[in-house]
Image 1 (tube, rainbow, N blue to C red):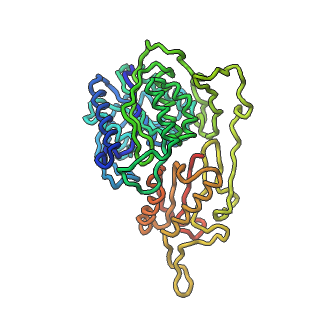
Image 2 (cartoon, one colour; image 1 turned 90 degrees about the horizontal axis):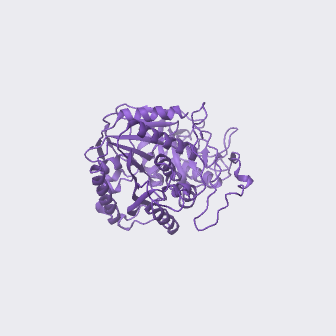
Image 3 (cartoon, rainbow, N blue to C red; image 1 turned 120 degrees about the horizontal axis):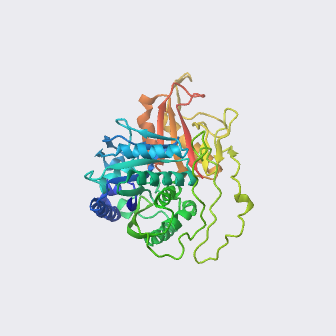
Amino acid sequence: MIINTYIVPGQPHPLLAPDRNAGWASLRSAYEQVGKEIEASGAELLLLYSTQWFSVIGHLFQTDPKPKWTLVDQNWYEFGSIDYEFRIDPKFGELYAGISRQHGMQSATVNYHGFPIDTGTVVALKLLNANNAVPASVVSCNIYAEREETRLLGRAGREAIDAYGKKTIVVVVTNLSNRYEVAEIDPARDRISSAKDDEWNRKILEMLGEGRLEDVAQVAREFGREANADMGFKAIWWLAALAGENNKYDGKVWDYQPVWGTGNAIVSLTPAPNKEIDFEKEFDESPILESVEQGTGLETHNVLAEAPDVHRQSEMSSHEDEPPPAEWMSAPAPATFVTKKAAPPIGPYPHAKRVGNLLFLSGIGPRRPVTGEIPGIIRDGAGSVIGHDIGVQTRSVIDNVRAILEEAGSRLENVLDVTVYLTDMDRDFEQFNRIYGEYFAAIQPTRTTVGVDSLPTPIAVEFKIIASV
């Protein structure tokens, strides 16, 4: 039984630095009010889906009954650390994972000491469930799962809740607009990055305040494009599917504030099954798939773009009898990109390949465009190479990445995931990490840093990038 649902942001600012900005303090206050509401609700389970817990192969479910660690956010480390110890319901996580597998999705449980819990989940649980009064369960956000698989994951969650038989609070941890300020700002002067993003955020919140959850799910793709919504606002697909894909909710917007340029809101959506509405499904809707094809276990693991939703605004006439344009009937073919603004590839591969709305970059090093010269090489008086400047090479890598992204119709702010290869981890990591932070601290891509013996050319650093378009 679902007794209430909430949409909350996952930035650490309201938890760690509410005194530095009135809006962050306001979000902290709203968070705590919702926490009191949850504590008084009689809930027996708190189910969270956080866009900050990325998974790549399938879906993960936290089943460690008492995860305990200290979190230092990789982007906002200057705000301090967060000690946490949570109360997790492992039986529900195992049940949810099992039902997801029955629907053909690749699913696995996670239960080992030290597994990193994402900032969004930590912030939400610390502020909503400070005393661990309600046991929690957490599911990951697969970065490749598009609309249909995300909806199916939501449906599996509802089946798990119904089978478990406990009163459940459902929480999605997601920003609205997700355009960060990319330079240092005065926290007291924080604002939404653009007027367009703010306009879109307010329209979405108006709909949510009216309880129109399914309508918001139907315009999520457009919102994602226009306002760079957090993970394409896919969390709302999961929530809407889990909650029954209708507009029968009593909505309340508790707060809406900027956090480092992004749009952050706290919203509650209380099921109201007897609510009278003009159109239960105002927008065109397709049924949820019963399962995904076996094999990879991922309906969209090849990340081909889906056909855009055909929808209509309530004030416009319906066009349900009209067929969609022919170009919507199939996904676009993958496209490859090579630019002269970055060093030429050293083998038979492109700089980047676009598949659907994702862009995959080959390994990118610091070599200069056109000439292929390696910057930051240190030589002795005889001209022999005796070392390298990791700072120079790191900046050159990022310049190349930026040029390739822009050639492919993206930008640095759209980077989702970074894998970094360093040939001298002990010596170079600290300086590399500092320079990396100058460019990516506000963008917050996930990152893995790997030490390697060598790279194909005598360079000291290489990036592997996944970005959205």
